[in-house]
Structure formats: C-alpha cells, structure tokens
Length: 252
Ligand SMILES: O=C(O)[C@H](O)[C@@H](O)[C@H](O)[C@H](O)COP(=O)(O)O
Image 1 (tube, rainbow, N blue to C red):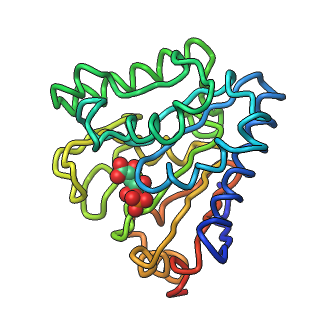
Image 2: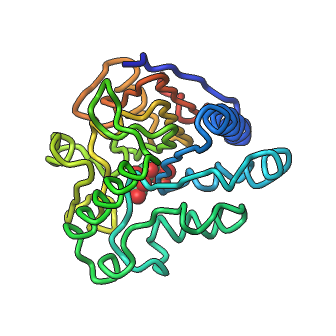
Image 3: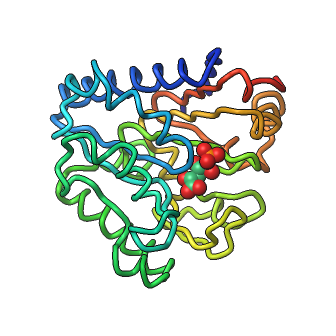
C-alpha cells in the first residue's frame, strides 16, 4: 500500500490548479492504457475546487467521453434536493463537460427520493457488480475489491472521509462494498458510502483539504497517525496524496 504524501499549496487557487492537472494526467494515462477512466467523486467543497477542469486547457484536452463517474458517498435524498451530491456535481461540473449520461452512475433515483438508505446502498453495490461483469471496473488482484483509477476525497473537521465518521461502525465493514448510515453527525443523516477496503483499493487517492476548520484533524493524522479519525486509514494501491492549503496545514 502507498505511503501518504503531502503537498501544501499557498492558496486554494493553486491547490485547485494542481488537482486539475493531476486529474487530467491520470485521465490521459488510463485512457491510453485501457480506453477508459474511472473517477470517484465526493461531495462538499471539492466540486468547487474542480472548477479548473471546465476551463482551458482541460475542457478541450480531456477525452470526456471515456470517463465513468461514481460517488464515494451520497446523501439519501431526491436528485433535485440541494443536499444531493449528484446535484452538486451536476450543477458545478458534470453538466459542463460532455460525459455520456450512461457513464454517470448516480444513486438510484426512486429509492433515494423514498429515503431508503439500506436499499440505496444495496442497489449501488449491484451497479458496481454489473460494471465488473461489463469490464468497466476490474477487481484488484491484490485487494480482491473493485479497483477505481482515481478517487477525489475531502475530509470534514471531525476527520471523516466519504461517510465514514468517527465512532460509527461503518469504518469496520469489510464484507460489503457499499454500506449505509442513518445517523450521520453531518447532516443530512441518511447516506450511503463506499466501505474502507473499497476506498483503499483505488489506484490513486487524492485527498484535498482547505481552510482552518479541519486543521486540527490534519495535524492529528499527520503527526500522530490518530486512527480514531477515519481519514487516517486512507491508503491507495499506487498513490495516496494529500493536497492542503496553508490554512489546513496551519497546525502542522
Ligand atoms: O457528502 C459529504 O458530506 C461529502 O462527501 C463528505 O465526505 C465531504 O467530502 C467531507 O465532509 C468534506 O466536506 P467539505 O469539503 O464540505 O468540508
């Protein structure tokens, strides 16, 4: 498993530039090697930081038609709900680039609107299993879990990543690929999330963190490897890279 690497950027703008460059390079590499690129998004501020991808040179140089897009976690609510990570990504990013609709794998629309978190998690896992059969997602020979090319993650001030929260049992789930939570400390309470072994089976994991609020948790992880914080468990098969702005790195 890859060692954690950290890069601190003077500003959010520079972090955002670097994230676009990193994503574009991996997109070109994987499309050249296997004809497609699997990207996993999270919610939160990350989508804002992806804004550079919808600008030149990336908007014209990336082969968007070869992208397959997933969510590492999703809030269980209607697609139109302002809480929806799907809506956030569609409005801020995906609607601006020519990725075929069929390559955008959102939470099941009806079960999400019905608020059935357990069913949504099971359906999302079924969706991943079908894509394994269709050879869109390989199963890693090393980990035995699905292997995504790039996952773009964020961390909350409490050290959570995806919807794996401190002092909640989801972090220990090893059988399922996708699980659910109905009492998330960050609203809204109902969510689905990739499990830790799936998150860590990605080839490249990029964790992007800005602002002062998560700075203490960043320091707990970097200085003390405090495993009570779910983000401390992040790994990857090839690269586990953490992009911080100055504020997020201020307690280091
Ligand atoms: O659904 C969510 O809430 C997100 O996917 C979540 O895991 C997010 O990545 C972190 O909470 C960081 O969020 P911020 O960038 O908003 O702090």
